[in-house]
Picture 1 (cartoon, each protein chain N blue to C red):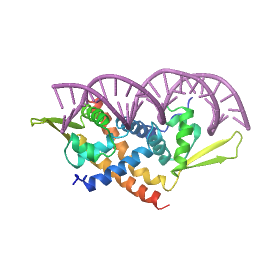
Picture 2 (picture 1 turned 90 degrees about the horizontal axis):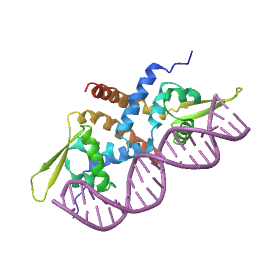
Picture 3 (picture 1 turned 45 degrees about the horizontal axis):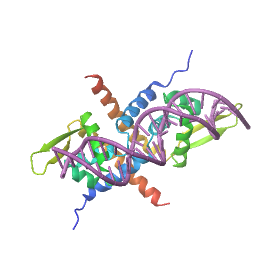
Picture 4 (picture 1 turned 180 degrees about the vertical axis):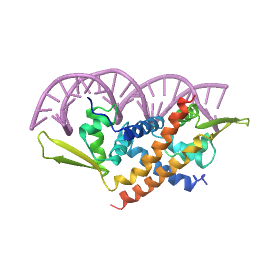
Length: 114
Length: 114
DNA sequence: CAGAATCCAACGGGATACTG
DNA sequence: CAGTATCCCGTTGGATTCTG
């Protein structure tokens, strides 16, 4: 008989793997955090998410939209403006982003303190 | 005068970026979650973290050790056994992994339900 | 058992130039 | 303004083989 993986642990790991896969890449989680804060236009995001290129921003936004975490809304202004907004479902990530940010801030202090 | 990024948001994004960078790659967060659960040997991890290859497990463990999130302990048995354990600092990630897993489980249900 | 070494295909992501 | 298209290189990570 084979050795069975620990069930409780195993479920957790699968779930975590799912999440890490959904948010893989350098920018997705940051974009979500940003849009959790408030809805923003493409150019705003480009400023807020420091370091991201236009190409990557487009790509990541598209994927997030496909996963129904954000919505894209084209305003009929001249020139065109596009607004991105977190969906109701995407907003369920708020707590997650907060938890990550909190740990990250503490980690930063720890690194600097050395 | 340039447009200033929103400060509160900006700090959060930097922190999140740090975390995502620290745990980038396919497996690190899963390994941490696993070791948060209990200390394990190399071969146990290989079983629990389903799909990971030996090569990747070694690499990821080494990086996690470098960041002082886990410790490596060689037991003097025959043949050699190595035990990995979460550090006190690494254990501060427990809450984070729980939050991720919780969202992930819910997300899974949502996907399946469609 | 717990890795290290090698090989290699696939993907990620930056820079740049172009468009409606 | 909000993208798209192309080029291209560095990294990721799987498969396999070898070792103390």
